[in-house]
Length: 331
Length: 134
Image (cartoon, rainbow over all chains, first blue to last red; front, side):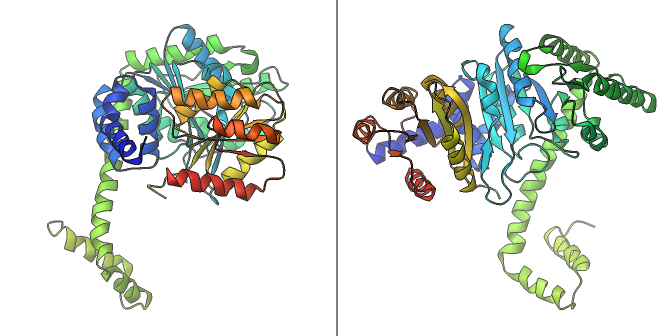
């Protein structure tokens, strides 16, 4: 194939990428995800065409410290879903190096069973500098899998510490995975990640300390209930993912949460809030992109910085002045 | 930070051999070079490797074999990639590959074979040059 016809080929693929995804092309889905990851401007148009077909998949988030067994659990949950003839998309997030930008994405190794199945689509994503436990574009990748027709999308976060709670804003059901032997982690996780669980899983439950950990977490859940009345009380389940123990009860618990979300009207509320947040951040990005281009484009900004550095002007008043010039109608 | 394309590599060990030191080292070398490397682990069938390349939209598939199965596995991966419309994926191999096997592997579509002692920076350079030309 000569270069010219090859280029032509690619442009055809580009034009129909969204349509092809909706028709079930795995290749198109993989390519579109790459465009989205690269924040390629062409991706927005495709995402726009896919959006009307989203909202059907149940999005399951799996988070927890490194090494607690998130990937293995993802594999096992996927297996049970497959036995029920549900199709599954998996987004597995691992960290990018802040130094080189590169990443070693190792979650796929634990998903051997799932990775041989054509009805399971697994995509590894690097965080590319995002700090919330997900990549900046993970929510859009979920939408692509949803629009493609996956019944479930499972999102595995990076191994988290305390503060990476973005998954709770992204998933319908969030599972926090803990393992015994990381005794302190429960202390350190109390403030952030421990607050976002719809379900707790104590994995590696065949190890010593598992029952104590279960008790500890249950006490926390009870405390939560006493402090703040909530319609949902997070169950605490034990699993041994590598032995495939506890996976089915876990899936039942996930299904319970899903029913709760649907019957209580919470799903609608949560998804509305999510849509609001996403639209708002798109808007902010678009505004800042356009406006900043105007401000930074003419070189006057650098003059202003000179003035501020020399203390001839102050940054607070200067910023107000800039905004008033661009949006003269604002008060 | 935005709008940046990164080279995506699938690093795989086809067949039954369990010697993955080389594959793991290279996975790290590629990551250090700024690439995004999906390490698929041991005992991969060509089908699994190609499925991974498809789903991950890989630019490169790196195969490592130390057990003498390269003459079957490497060309089979190339063939399956083509069947799936992934002709533009660069396939490179390494491990213990006898010199006399290299021409045949290259004929089958493996872009390069890197034997023991190859400098890792040469492998990185080769990949970066080939992929950016695509």
